Image (cartoon, rainbow, N blue to C red; front, side):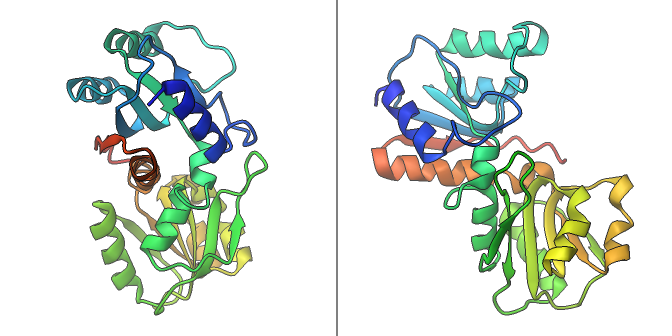
Length: 251
């Protein structure tokens, strides 16, 4: 498949141009390789990820966390190392950060909701104007231990739980990545349980203050699901070869 054709499709499907982010999203590194047959999927653009993608002969690396986080950067230091490696191996880099968090079908939060039985009633949390998180009733109202076990098994992680809410989960809010500072907002939305990524000392007592169950499943683990769902979508639609490369950070 032509790289430019795929890029146009991804830009439109993910609304890259309309969802404001912290840096430019979409095709971040363009190489001389203009034909895409194999897409490596990953959360981060790190040297071992690039090497693994190259060993697999990937034509594109599709990630959640790209290499550009501001409008202008020097292509030097660690950033330069990553860009040089991508160019050397002919691997195009496509990044989708907030657009992948917010997507209603393959987004991190939409996928997490489906995985854990949340019937999405509302979207919330809009740091740049577009809601990223979801909230809704949980099918079967599982006990908190049942839910946490399911999360650990399906995300292949170890969770940390602040159990200050009810024993059975009725309504859950979800925000992948870093959402520790949104406990008050989640309580105001009417949730009794909150699933997010990484924790924060500064917000530790908020769960007790608001009588909320907070489940921290890790920034990395909660953001593995979107790129995999997007990759499967591309494989089904365009008959592309995709593979997820798992490099957990334990964060």
